[in-house]
Structure formats: C-alpha cells, structure tokens
Image (cartoon, rainbow, N blue to C red; front, side, top):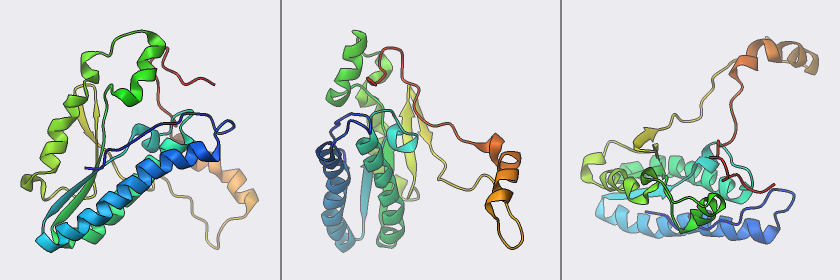
Length: 202
C-alpha cells in the first residue's frame, strides 16, 4: 500500500518550484519507487496486491493544490497502466481515495476550531483496503475506490460523454457555432465543496 504523503498548499501564483517538487516527489515518485520494487517480488511469486492512494484533489481539483492534485491524478494514471501490465502475473492494482482526519489535515480543522466528526475517523478506510489486499478481491483490478462519510464509493473511469462530429472535420467558426448547442449541458463541475471555514486561503 502506497500511502506516503505531504502537502505544501499554495495557489498557482504563489507556488514555488520547490513546493511543487517536494509534493510530487513524495507522492508520485514514492508510489513509483515502492511499486517498482514490490512488483518484481510479486511477479516471482505469481501473486500480489498493490493499493495506491489517490485523492478528491486529483479526481476533481481543489484550490491551492496544484502539486498535490497533479500527483494524485498521476497516481490514478499509474494505477490504470500497472493493472494492465501486471494483471497477467496475478497482481491486482487499485487505488483508494480515502477520507479522514489525519496529521496531514490538521490545519483544516484548526481553521474551524472544531473537533473532527465521527465519520472523519481514518480507521473507517481500513476495511475496504484490507479487503482489496485479500485473495477474495482477485477480480478487482484497475479500479478507483473511495470513501465519503460512512459510505464506500467506486468511480467511473474518464470516458466520452458527448460527441460532436462533422464530415471532413471542424473549423473554428463551426466549433463556435455548435459547441454550446451540443456540449453546454454536459460541462462538468470542477472542485471540491469544502465545509465552511475550511477553505484554503486565497
């Protein structure tokens, strides 16, 4: 299970290359380096389970988290690729987007002065992760799971939800004339709805 992580939250206009590198190296490179060595041993034994940790920041975006969101989205990409590459060796690769109050999220609750609610207990993530690591979960591969409150979730992979076709291709004028007619009702919501008082400083 690849769970190491840090945050260095700043908006794009305030983020330094050092802020970006620090988070990417821990999350993305940490996940790659651990899985790379573990996969060798798992291949030899013909069995293995890799569980990566992603985040809503990677799934939907979150203000002030360019570095964190990019790394977590990259981890989902690695999950998809590794599930394809390693499945033939009896190795499954899935990702979990957990929820919970941990040392990494202490600053969020500090902003409100409130204690984390019962559903913020990080131990609530453990049953799903434990099951994914079991032999019983051999048929689950390349999936993104998550937790919200007292519920577990599974995410649909990115896929086309609209289609705009014209014989011979499009020009700018054609796109301008037709985009809203075809795609306006399918534009996707971006970002997390943070509880009051937990918003990142602008």
